[in-house]
Image 1 (spheres, rainbow, N blue to C red):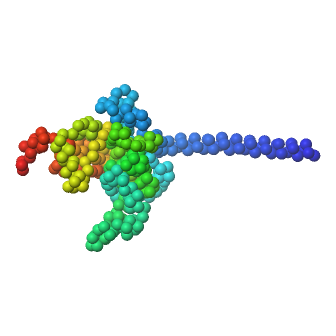
Image 2 (image 1 turned 30 degrees about the vertical axis):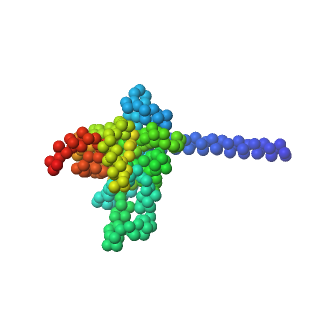
Image 3 (image 1 turned 90 degrees about the horizontal axis):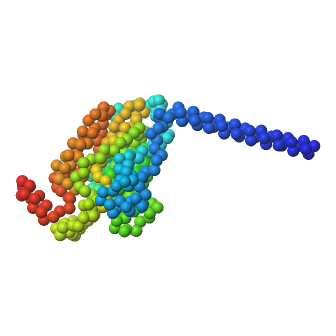
Length: 357
């Protein structure tokens, strides 16, 4: 009897193991079939790391005006490759037009978020407008309260949001991935393009967390709908941020900086960076399968308006063959002034060129 019971239990265990093995293989087959079926639709989900550069690479970059070899290759890849993150459920919900798209428009907003230093307030605007309204309305005139409420509502209803001055992995914003946090608050997809690799904290030997430091600063596009693909357009350089941030300043530049700090309470800081201004171009797939192209750009501020005009011309030339609906957003730094570092010679030349002088 005991032998019979033992044999029975052994046989049942053997059957259970067989079922588990069969179930495992069936599951593998189902996953494989699903990936094959959705391969063209899920191919643009990005799983690669957001940075190509290690902290050791950044330390080398901070000492090299013109990097060479593998370091130059990695920097070039970082500056030219967009990072795309699509939430799977946001993609699957739009496949084959299963989600009706009845709106006659999409709402696009733009915001220069100044590195994301007030990221908690930004997230509150998108996640809890009422709370932000009641906390912030004391800062505006009573007659503007309705306008504030409407602006908050309009911003929160945006289908696509273009962002400038987005930090990722920098001590000044507590090493946060600013775009990821805002996208999470909205449950949106996003694309990010590196405008600059920030080297100042490393070069000036600021205390940093080497495990968290990425040093990325750039443009981003957040979208309720899937981002099918994206590319980066590097704009003509109007200012050398690496040598400009690393060079010796003229006495007049120090006077200007002192005056800006004491008179206007505005600090003019050195920003040692590799990279330059760029435009992030993203193709967004609407639920009716129509593609809309959105561009997020940020033009140079440390130059004359004529130089910014060259950047605009270059951008338009690179966009002129697009046949989908096109939206261009960004901080264009439209100004008649020049905020690049100054000198006695430059000030004299500037005034000789000024018709109002």
